[in-house]
Image 1 (tube, helix red, strand yellow):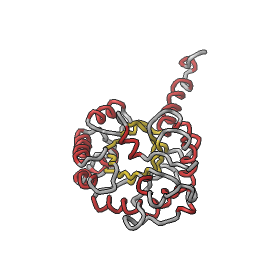
Image 2: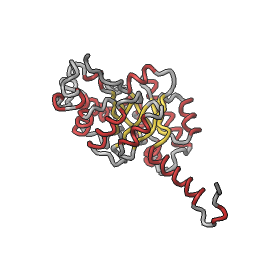
Image 3: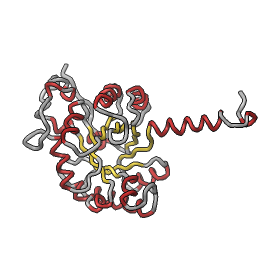
Image 4: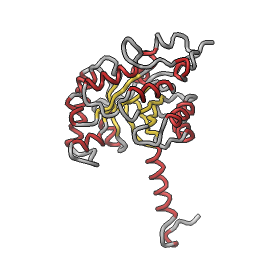
Length: 266
């Protein structure tokens, strides 16, 4: 029986009848990634930009989640053709490129994930998990279908260019990052400031007008729901490390009160 690869994010978005909910996987642990993959969310974002994830860690997490229906997306740390080539060769089918602020930068990302003559991705399928070491028939000829490319709009300049970025052939979706967007607007740490929210919604409108799905990061459920109502097709609603941090804090608040009389009894 011929081997088959999983579904890239592009196909998942095209077939979905509701917005797709996902979470960050930033711990670097394949065990945590597998636990999250089995939770029932639509997609996971394995983060190389801010998480302690190098190539070996990403490989382990891709292998850990492969048995589950959730779609793994890998965010590379930069719009770098070498990094993108390596991550794709690890078997990532869906990648997110951060800090894309112009159509030219979007085109560079497209070229990095496509083989010649449409791009400049290096050919190493015989050596790589992406083609299962040449066990996927016709991988090179059909490679574009196996890869989904998303780019991240997260600066004031990127918001103004969002429509042009989304219109680039080969960009499958655009993801808006309110945290860095707020910082670029002089509103560091104020992701829900009205001016930031207005910029996010402008980006939504421009991307949707270009006919592409738009996503966003929003850990506050009310904020996430408001963005879904505004047209977000996919959202990140939590992070593994944030859930662990808040959960351990809640345990400490309950069980480690300074006054023993304030601690709950069995």
